[in-house]
Length: 375
Ligand code: BGC
Image 1 (tube, helix red, strand yellow):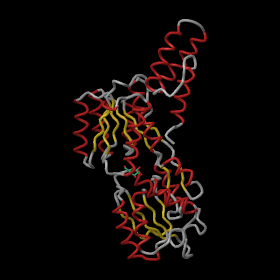
Image 2: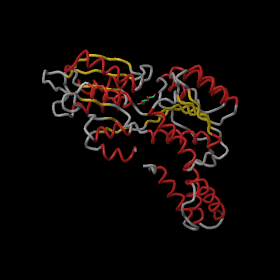
Image 3: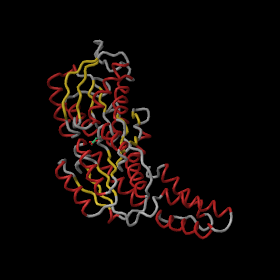
Image 4: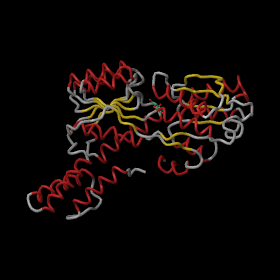
């Protein structure tokens, strides 16, 4: 799954230019340099050459121009997060392998869940003269302050994963600031989770009492992903005319061990009354599954369980019928879009304030296919 549409398009563009020479297994950076050179030589000559130049420009642009000397500062809210680890790995891979950045010019810091620490890292990025930043804020409410710091330093910033609020995004537009957000609309993932329950044979009402009794294991509530998934998963049920009963809503901070503890305690307290376990992410759903197994309950028989992210283990569980569903939080698409936006800034191009990547519903029907993409 490493080869995405974009990468394929880039390779194609390079191949079109290089068809005059060769198109083998050369690395993207070399390919681009060769493509540009090829186009330059022929540009002055014929109509055909003009065409080649256009194609070369497209190839260079697709590969991000010459990024080899560009310095990038990246800070992740904390390294100890399953999903953000996948994201960060893909971000670095894509920038180095596909866009021609040098690994030694990319600094990735661990925000350690501490905004003061992360703000410090951002100040150091500014002092060291990075050309662009990609930031996964610890607290999205810090965005106005951080954006102003970046503006004063003349450094564009791409925010990822934890979305600043609408007023802040609006300000980037009205004040013409070089700041943008790349993420996924968490309302969509919440809705998909709810639909996965609505689509079960008894619409989530396992005991047939006319209502769906659920527990909600929430991520960090400061994060809009947690707020929206909590709200919209349940809304999908009520929108379908289903009555719901919330037995418990508790924050598990995206963490597997906390997810396990919360669900273990809830199963002790509410027992068979629990028909659905909603988890705002897969890490907590994996914890929930451990608790469900330990309590001798059976997913898809006497309890339903859904998460979000499509971690490999979770998707495997959906294939095996041990989780009802999850939602693919496309870290490939998000990481690549974030890097592409950074490149646009470096090339002096305009960037939209908000860039969303779609989620994909994952149920038993397509889990095997999704597993191929994520593993
Ligand atoms: C993911 C979580 C992750 C969080 C970090 C969410 O989009 O679903 O797994 O912990 O982002 O901010």
